[in-house]
Length: 350
Image (tube, rainbow, N blue to C red; front, side, top):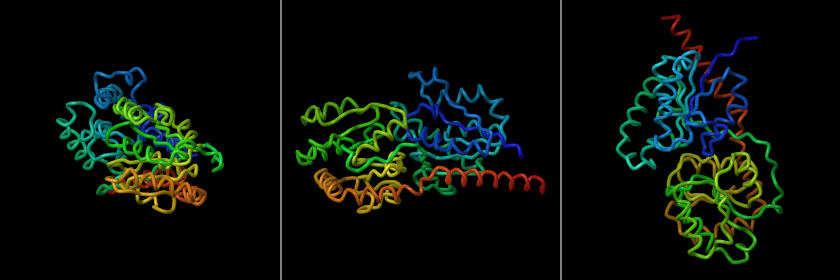
């Protein structure tokens, strides 16, 4: 049996515990990627994840420098972290970089001094483009990067449409997600719909106190439920019991939450940003709105989907087909192995 190549996988926080999109993304890849490579993961230990005074991105750089000798022992490095990729370039090992989210993470930095560091990530991205032998992008299109669709793999059962109740938002509770507009739209729904369907908000972030204050101000305390952070499988299970996934982001790549909702037959209402229109077909598996949508129109959209719910739910399952983790991982692994072989032949020929 042919020996598997050693592959280092870099991501800032553990894919076993992280709530955001990258954690589930890597975890779903891992299920099958380990059949192609001997994987070694490099992420911050739990004790360092708890550090709040130093940005995790900077801690991760120091962590990788500490583990540099182990990093060099791998045949290829797969990185989901820009700062991780920067360190990886100094190993002179073949680098595969996967871009996640926004072009420059400092553009939405929660640190007061973040805006002054955007030049750092502009530099890092230039290095990545110059040194990586394969580039992928989750979300927005980037020159020279192959499109990477979110892989979805789980064992959550699809619920009967008659057993589903309520609506859910899932993601970071930050300004860019425009969650107050979702709450306002929910407030415009008829009393009977609100009586049968609560609004569930899953996630944590700096906007949580403001959102709770808004809910209190418009007298929806008994109708809006804040679920906090939870592991990915629990979130999918809860989503599968809801009627709709509600999104209203001002900017996105492609949210993992949408692919996961489709995989359990949950239609989606969302703003038409990033790659969302590529997969959310308005009038088929959900509805799309401009960023500056009117909350009353959004509320009417919720009503219209509920009136034809079975059709939308069946279409959501059809829309989930491109996210099959096994096929996505197979193509990703074969791309890497083919490129490594080509590189080896090029070196021999040279």
